[in-house]
Image (cartoon, rainbow, N blue to C red; front, side, top):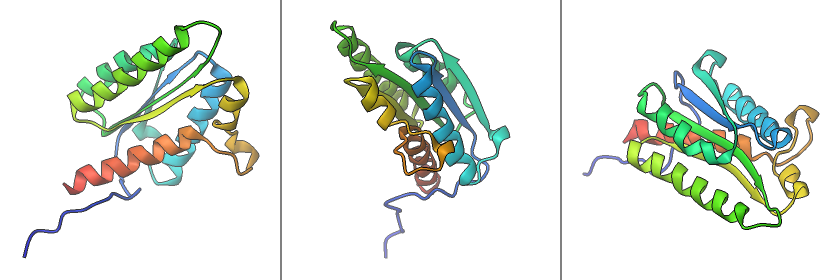
Length: 161
């Protein structure tokens, strides 16, 4: 009989250390993403003392900060949060593409879960719809919360492998 190998993780990862790297640009949106992520982590048993917060100027700075955090060897996962809203120039495409590529590279190169909480929207309304204010206790979608749950599940899965 072969050894059991898990095919999915859970949200039960007591003692995990998590870094949240959040962009200040579009701060009204990213603060809601941050609130959603923190709420999800605490709700699933991660203590506030096991969550470190780092702020960067904008989305483009997320990959470098995540890489520095990953290389510290201190964390079980990183949650990258940011928001880029399309404007009238190609700048949006470059920032979104390079930020996405960079975050993915950090995860692969450092063998560490880096949850992708970067909103790339066409307008402010779409960003607001994806970063619902959890303090209002409404059924809002919050991609920060989803990124935190992804980080927890990946930590669990990695611990089982």
